[in-house]
Image 1 (cartoon, one colour):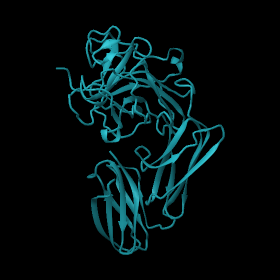
Image 2 (tube, rainbow, N blue to C red):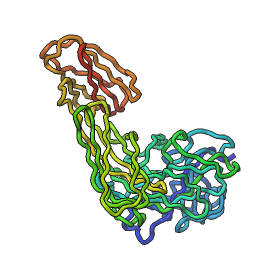
Image 3 (cartoon, rainbow, N blue to C red):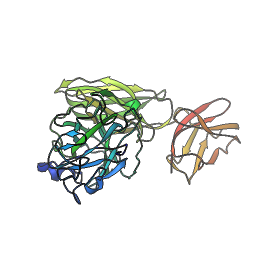
Image 4 (cartoon, rainbow, N blue to C red):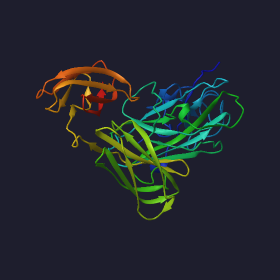
Length: 417
């Protein structure tokens, strides 16, 4: 019986725009030989599987698991050229539901992304004829390190919130992205868990309980129009300002909008892992500059990162640049922890108010608010520098809470490997 899992079909090249496309072998036309069976992604060098086993599909394929246009999953040619990739964005080849099964594709960029610059991203997707289901969250995530079993982390830099159920021809998934890091690689897949994915049934299962897609024409470019021609909006500026009372005012504006639906405001403690904190309706269509704002109360001090994601009416996403704000303890100089972020082999120095005298409780809380480490110390007045070895904690984002008999404050703390 054939393997349980498979992956993403990725595809052909933007022939007139190749010089502007940063994706290496974006249409999988270059290979080390025709595929002879399933799961031979690496023949389309330098592509690799980043989770389970995607298919490399080509008109010269050797059997039903790697040939175009008619194959195990249905009948569909590549979007352009002779090759594409294919894989699971939901489900498996089992006859009943199996949770959170995915296949990811991992490729190289010709040059690293430049932090703070807008990039235009797109790829083509076709739901295989014999798929029993269709889903949303088809998307792109950028990274700088390879992981053969990349986790489902419920985020993507560009993705579609709409279910893609197009079986005749290819849908275009597109959007813009402003990186905060110099990413060197690109991945394609559904990086969201089943609980965070919208799925619809489209036919009775015949080759398993799955949403299997062919993927083609991957494009990442700093040039407007290289990957797609119609932008939902043109970003203006975005700014975060600290306010009294542990509040942040986030403001942003668009220079124009076309078929926009809503904004999703996201917050992060480390600038990488973001959580959606609010939705706000967009104008829809406008040729004028429009201003938006939102007031947030994060309830902790330290550096806080924000970005805004614009969702089109068709589900495509456009992400603003990331901005940060420092909610320092100017209202109370109770304590400050440094360095932050902190490597595991470093000591954490906690600088306490010089007037503190007596018992002080130090707690480290995880993302769910659970105390993962507690320590009490007796501090004498004028001797408030305390050092801690946190090597026993796992890398991640914590909240450090320092408490005396009369006051208590928290501060975000990022612990690195």
